[in-house]
Length: 210
Ligand SMILES: C[S@@+](CC[C@H](N)C(=O)[O-])C[C@H]1O[C@@H](n2cnc3c(N)ncnc32)[C@H](O)[C@@H]1O
Image (cartoon, rainbow, N blue to C red):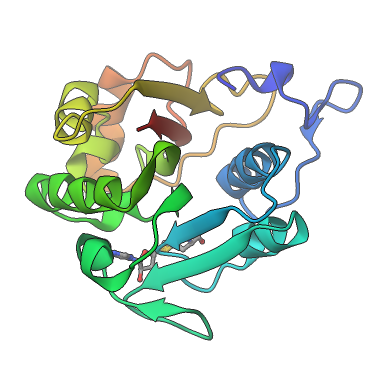
C-alpha cells in the first residue's frame, strides 16, 4: 500500500489513519497482519519468527483457526526458543505460512540474512508463503536503513522462489505527517537518497512463495 490515501484504514474525511497501533508504522504492520488473516487459516501450520513480546499476529492466527508456532531467542510464554537459522533442526513439521515481522533488520550481517532465509525456506511447504516486513530508513542492517534493493534481492535469491513480491507501506504518506525519528548520521544521507517529499520511515513488505 504505497499510497496511504488508497489504504482501507485511511479516513478521507478526517485525513487520518484509523488502524490500531502506537506508532505510524505499527499501524501499517497491523493492517498487513489483518490482510494475511482474511485468508482461510483453518488447521494451517503457521510459524512466527522473532515475535518478541508482540501477540497481535498470534492472536489473529488463532482466531482464524490456524496452528501457531513461535521461534525467538528470547521466548516469553511461547513454543520454541532459538534463532531463525536453526528452524530446520528445531521443527519436524513443515509450515504453510512463515511470518517474520520487524525482525529481519536485526539479522546483522548480509550472510546471516541469507543463511536464515535458507533455513526458513527448508521448513516451508511447496506453495507456502514466507511473509516478511521490515522498517526502511530506520535501524539495523544497512541494506534496510539505506534501502539497498539489489542487496535485499541478492539475499532472498539464495533460494529459489516461485514468486517474490515487494509492497511499500507508508511510502507516499500524504496527507499524513512524516515519521522521521532518524539517527543523526543517516538523516543527511536519507534526504539525498529518498524520493519522498520529506524523508519518512516506511515499511517494506516482502511476500515469497515457495
Ligand atoms: C523489534 S523485535 C520485533 C518483535 C515483533 N515481531 C514485533 O513486530 O513487535 C525483534 C525480534 O526479533 C528477534 N530476533 C532477533 N534475531 C533473531 C533471529 N536470528 N532469529 C529469530 N528471532 C530473532 C528478537 O529476539 C526480537 O524479539
